[in-house]
Length: 319
Ligand SMILES: NC(=O)C1=CN([C@@H]2O[C@H](COP(=O)(O)OP(=O)(O)OC[C@H]3O[C@@H](n4cnc5c(N)ncnc54)[C@H](O)[C@@H]3O)[C@@H](O)[C@H]2O)C=CC1
Ligand SMILES: NCC(=O)COP(=O)(O)O
Image (cartoon, rainbow, N blue to C red; front, side, top):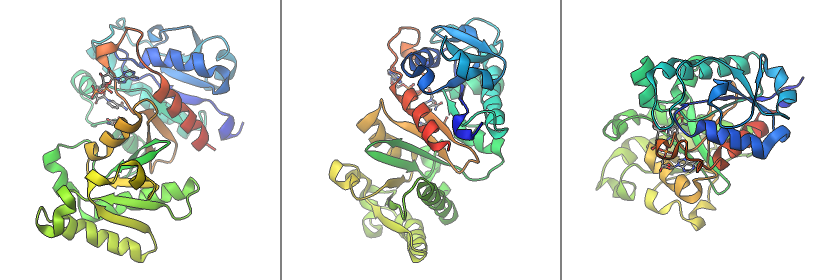
């Protein structure tokens, strides 16, 4: 079976969140059109399930229910209330998903949202998110988080760190690696020489050094070196004016300096349709752009659109 024909592995994420509900809703919408299987506790899914013992059974099982490679998470799920006893299983489901993709048993990995603090408190999870954990599992040093919707792609150059630590983390080496990985990923997705817009860190992109010096000392030199190699780079641009509809036409991806600089515009433009994709891994990984939404877990109000978009993107990329 070619990679494109394999099912997508979907780690269940935090059982107390909306993951089990949006997974069932995604299966209702996608059915056999896009076979996936869940790695998690079958009792947690809010809909019909078919337990399977191997990913290859997913294609048949998907006609009858959500295919689940099931593992016993222990105590029953309580929506909105993470349980310490589940944490190690949530982490193991991600780890198993990576193993299955790397062994060629699944086409790609899609991850349902985790609650980072619940994993830290419950199982001593030392990674700030999937992105960093997946890099660790895959044995790669540098990965890049990209969020994509039909109208925008954004990359935060720094991810899950306190705002106060951002300037020190933005070294020339780091920024260069982020831009290179992004450039290579877009090239592999069919962009000849992708147009990359780079935000400044400070208001007005530093205003020539009057409002901060990171642009002069870090960003401008990096862009100069990479332009000399032929990369199509614009910037550093003032972040407040680079995301309106007209400005977005000028680039294929925006590199931002920190998490919220990147994620606020995309979640504002298309919260339902945004997809988080990890660049730089030796396999495809996508995820919905939202989190565990404890405030609505178990109420039947969760929107599966972003998970469906994440599964579709995984399918498209896994060829
Ligand atoms: N890929 C992942 O695993 C992600 C995990 N998280 C984690 O999720 C937890 C909660 O994070 P928050 O900042 O509260 O963000 P959140 O995305 O879970 O919730 C923010 C707001 O959006 C609503 N919302 C989110 N997804 C929705 C959906 N599909 N349908 C309808 N409404 C939805 C929620 O009800 C809430 O009001 C944190 O632990 C965070 O780290 C956050 C983002 C991604
Ligand atoms: N805000 C994005 C986010 O937290 C997702 O992170 P990750 O778990 O995909 O690394």
